[in-house]
Length: 64
Image (cartoon, rainbow, N blue to C red; front, side, top):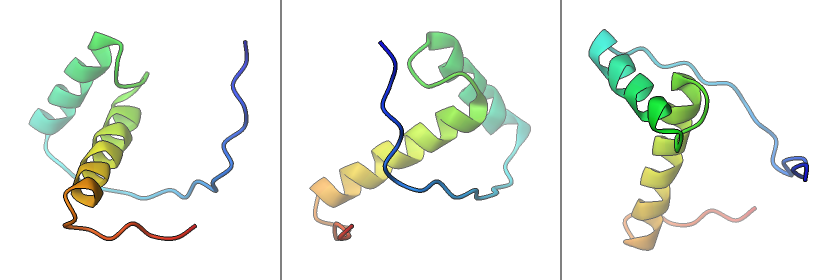
């Protein structure tokens, strides 16, 4: 079954980090739960962290 197209527009962002962080992201990718690349793993971690902050009330949910 194919996935539906993403309804939200994606925009690129650039971050700079250390080799150690990239290695950790690669290790997460190897688990099979964090995407197919270190960039996907970073996006998923960021999204999860933001969702946690919203649930804790430390960040306001933005309207769409």
